[in-house]
Amino acid sequence: MHSDRFPFALPHLDRNALARSERGFLERIRREPSTRIAAVYDRQLAVVPAGGGETGERLRWFIADEFPGFLREHPETLWLYLGRQDGVDVVAIVIPELVEGMSTREWRTGVVWRELRQFVEGGAWSECEVALPAVALANWHVTALFCGRCGGRTQLSQSGWVRVCENCSVEHFPRTDAAVIMAVVDEDDRLLLGNSTKWPRNRFSTLAGFVEPGETLEAAVRREVLEETSVRVSDVAYWESQPWPFPASLMLGYFARAVSHSIVVEEDEIREARWFTRAELRDGAERGSIGLPGATTIARGLIEVWLAGEHRL
Ligand SMILES: [Zn+2]
Image (cartoon, rainbow, N blue to C red; front, side, top):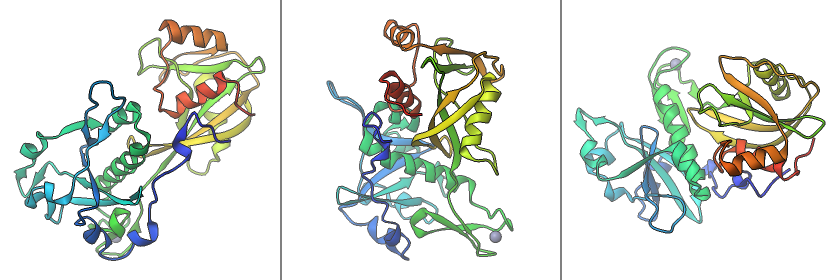
């Protein structure tokens, strides 16, 4: 079921996967004056801050000539092809801390940087489609410099979407770690939300957790709800997904039907979990006594669909 409340399911970025795997493609595209280049540094993105009256920040787009030559042409500077958007090729450059011992700090101080999480919460949807894979890929390259099979060095390939071992030639692909996030609803149509030990005491959100090897997504939903709150779940229905590269997750969103009510929280992760009626949650959120996740998160999407009574189980 698609919901207009949560537009991640409608991509406007063509990843152009056939073209990007051609040898030399990225080297050619990144030099084209029409190519838009996003800059990434340490999980942050170069942005143009929102002016007065504007909603949301925008990515700052560069062309190749705006980067100093030592940075642009150095073989260790990471370039990544992201795809085509509105008929224009979109590329990312990952700015290193140092290039041959020279700090890139001076260049970086001329740019406004924003953490990905903050940028996503700012709400520029079309640009999140670029920002998310840019930072996700940059995160992966940092951890994939050596082959997991033989320990040899790896080389970037296919415009940044593959790394190939120089020694044993095995191809390594970017990782995505599956995580489930679920809105658990009881027969009185109340919603189960939890307060993480990492959050302020009044912030409540849907439960979530990682999928384990050899486990189905449905089993992961049931196991995580049981582990975190002792609530048992029967029916599980998929809703939508959201890339969540902190550092490499994909959030798979579910609605789930509870078949038990009493709550015993797993105290290391969850400080408190509660059943909410719609009136309780709406009133609490309006008065500010309950904090909810940001408008662009899948957690909030699940909550809003339940609030509107549009969920299906
Ligand atoms: Zn190898």
